[in-house]
Image (cartoon, rainbow over all chains, first blue to last red; front, side):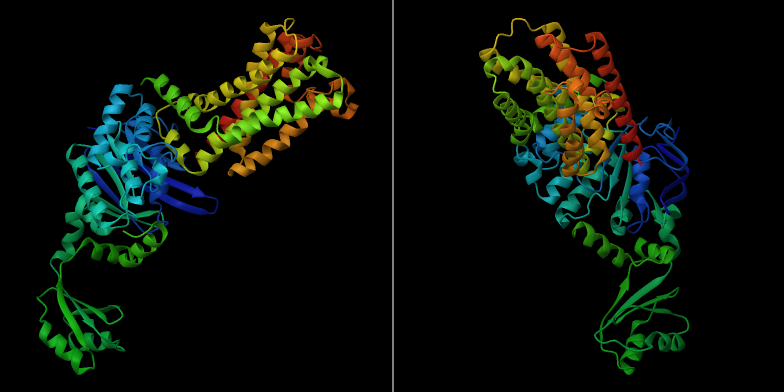
Length: 324
Length: 245
């Protein structure tokens, strides 16, 4: 069986900047594939090339077995696209927007109206169906944009940062909808900067940094190396100078690292005894406020591989696109 | 896929959303009528001058109506990213752009007949050769629309599109023989007239309304057709080059 998406040596250059530097990957049919990276890593440029909105400088793209390298728009009947910013018509109502998007894929009047009503119901937008899209809240706009992306029941769905800028409840609902689509057999290509979102939803994940894919694997395989580790995070009310060096000298079996103001992360292959650590810190003038065991997560792997602090990436994105 | 469904819905959506809105009415109708009034008063020759003014007014109505529309239906949609929605649809690019421009062509044709209807009450139009007049109106609408498309894809802001449009529109009023015969233009301006599509459309209109045309109708319409094809092809090439990066 052919891959839903197969990319080989894809490159894209904007004047002097190489946005995507020879990436290769494939996505199986029915797979939920995560594309994870910080702002400017090349996620949206990659989606644009895959969906025919940008032309690669080099490399090949096959979507659903169709060679799209020289004909960027050849496989558009197979795909649905939800861009990072809503691109529906502000002067049309929610219902009319969905009907119009369905018409672009050749759906007849009865079919598109039925499908529009069904999706408005699924996304909880029935009450707003006759209101103009321009007057929708950010979360409602996001939901309707996703509904427009799936109105024609695409085989392959591209989701670019689907939960950015919407509230927690809305994001949770959207994640459930993405999971449901995945369950129904849709191939999903998801870009996100929310690492926990990718961890929860994706079968496989690619980390992209500065236009290069630095790692592709299943979530399980990515996390495995650190699952054997024991992690403790200690929070201190005050900041201490050179505490990391002192800890490493006194506890050579532990890997200690200061990860923020008054925040120390301790890792070891054996269970960490918290008591001696806390006593040591307090003897050195620390006011320990909290010490807790941490579950190893994909975020740890992301930080380790990319060297980018996930929290910094999240804040940067939220500053640009609104908080979640 | 039923492509006609996509074509028809793009056309209907544009008609419902953008046309007959106040700015379009002002550019497409009020402005040309103001020009007519100006020339009518200036000529001082009374109602008999209507037949000589009518071709110019019709051509200006089409020119302003169509070119101002494309700044909205194309440049504005590109700016707010909704044009991307169309580019993502499995519709051949040429058909997509024809759907986007068809509304403006129809709007241009409708604009053309507003001064004609008004003239019906003021002058005798029995000698008008409608078999030449109607195709000329249609071809001018197509050429002006594609000129608008050419302008709309060359810029990124709506105000730039309007400014750039005026760069073409205002000289065309004087250079294309709408109100002033080309033979009365200074020698150095005459060649310029013949590289502007409206010159050939206006010639047919003058011929159809009062018999004062310079070239055969078939040649005028063929040259207009060539301009249409050229402008459409250049616009498509520009969109592919600039918008599908």
